[in-house]
Structures are given as structure tokens and as C-alpha cells.
Image (tube, rainbow, N blue to C red):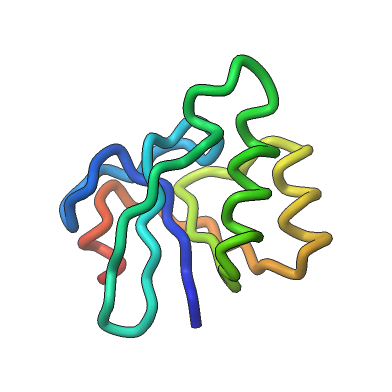
Length: 96
């Protein structure tokens, strides 16, 4: 399963960030982790929707967040069939 996690930095111990404004997404596939720049992070508006469109285009099947995304982003993810899981976590390495 391909999982996206919004993070503050390109490190396995990076802090979990808010969905739309996260600088990066950690993309987890099995044992592999890659880091991709979030195009929504610098958007003047619609950051959550841009972030949603990005993870959809990457073929992500699940997003793990520390708190819910905004309503527009959540709707876009739901319509794309992406599972959203809310977890009380601080760092990426808590998931890995």
C-alpha cells in the first residue's frame, strides 16, 4: 500500500505537519520511504486541495495525519477513494 504522510523535513525523524501546508510528503511503500515536495505548501490559497491533487496524482492509497485536513481537501481525498487515518503522532519514525 502506498501511504503519504505530511512532514516538515526530508528525514525519517521529521515532525508530522499539517496536511495542506506541509513542506514535504513522506511516501511510504513497504520498506521504502521517499520524500516529495508538496506543491500546496506555498499556495496563496487552496493549499489543501493542491496537496490532495498531488497525493492523488502520486497514486497514494492512504494518508496518515495528526489532525483532520480541511473540508475541501478531505472531500477531494474521499472522492478519490483515499483512506484518511488520524493518529496521535509527532514524528514520522513513529509510523515506520
